[in-house]
Amino acid sequence: MKSVAIQPESAAREDGEPRSVPLPEYVYARLREDIFDLRLLPGDQITETEIAAFFGVSRTPVRQALQRLQGDGLMQGYVRGGWEVVPIDFKRFSELYELRKLIETHAVRRLCARHETAEPALVEALRPVWCVPQALRELDGPKAALQDEVFHQTLVRAAGNQEMTATFDRLTDRIRIVRRLDFLYGDCLHSTYDEHAAILDCIASGDGEQAIHLMDEHIEGSHAEVNQITLHRLHSARALSSNKPPPYVAVRVRRSF
Image (cartoon, rainbow, N blue to C red; front, top):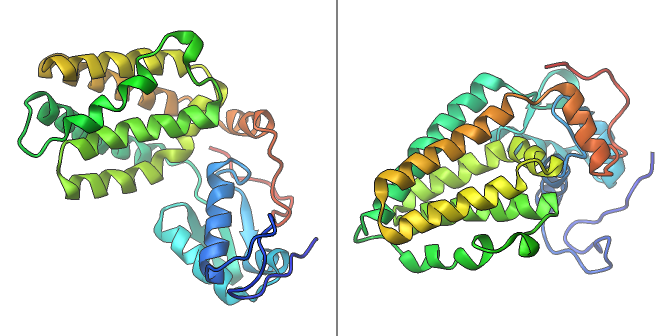
């Protein structure tokens, strides 16, 4: 296994730039990126020893990074320094999508009602991204997935409730993996643009009832796609993304779903 020498605080990044973040933060960011970019898949198993050897660090910052990922709901630990990317729990995702619907439909209701705390300028700034002809749409899956996150987070933020926004941002982290699968396959790109544009039109006209209806259907459609995810689709996603498993992942039998 290739080892990358990393020294605290002063080591160079892979792009040659000096790194100034603490080691636990650096390892956390790298592992988190591997999860969200599908280099690490639900059910993949790793150990503190393997990760420490790859990054050339002790197990202490590795353990701190993994414990933080566990707090994010992305990793779970078991015996003797072993860890696993959290397998897909359909009941958990169903509950998260229910919460997502409650927050987002409430947000569009406030926006359509022109609530005193609403920030309509934030919503208007979304139109040049989503209200565009097909020729101008972003067709790169990962980039479109990021734009989709920004769309929904912006609507909630524009509603003007900071606590609701913070809760929604944490929720977005927890459903990011399954949402990215949709965009990686590309079967929801154009429908997402059409639905986002229709929601923005309703908010602009103040049609709260229709905006809530469209948002409800939009989230339910996304949830339905989550329920179609299988182990085969996850591994196909890895193949489509041209991302191989990281060197610190040993070859093991992964848990089925």
